[in-house]
Length: 311
Image (cartoon, rainbow, N blue to C red; front, side, top):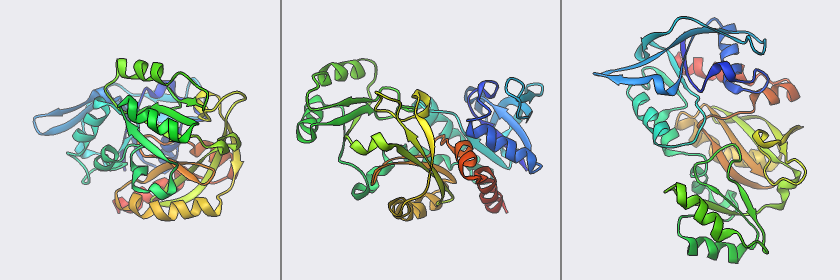
């Protein structure tokens, strides 16, 4: 098949941790032809969806891990699969790319389905499953957020459309910074904030469970660094081997059919203790760590699901 990757600069990825690199590596081993372009090279031109980018090959040598061909423009309708893999922020630039890619999907299979990526951002889809999630409020209004904190005492405050642990704050019962943080966030963004009850179980780790076409295939545990609340690997969280608990399987059984129905082939959910906190559909990570810990080739399973959909 002809495969296009819409992603951040491929020259700068970590070959030992980046999921997009592993997906490209597996696709290459299966005989697929690869094309790479950056999101700002995507265009709609008089009825055609085009991208300027490069044919490429990959190899597992850091610093020499990608070989790019000459830049050329392609019609994305001629691709079999387009991967929507750029990292958030989930802003209007990101959303616009999903609108443009809607024009070629599903004749060209866009993974994950851009319509539902747009309508299921990480911290909002969980609202469909309130019994699985910790107490949550989404608001821009300071009084509403203050009332939630007064009720639950110890809370996590974060940007609604952030990623990688950026801008995540724990505010315990004695904290006096809520008003200042609200001023900070609302000073540069018009978006709401999300506030959730703090889960002490995070000290034992924030579990990333990988689902392929709605089915759980494994998990890694991300343990916060000493003195940190955040467990994201971007900010020093330590990945550890861990299995799937009965509660993990219960959560996946609830959300999996919806993810499969809506074309979310590769999804990573976050579970702290018994609670689902996020459903990551924009650019999930974790498949290389899981492969190292459990020997499960998640990239192979993902491509098998895609090849099945194309067939």
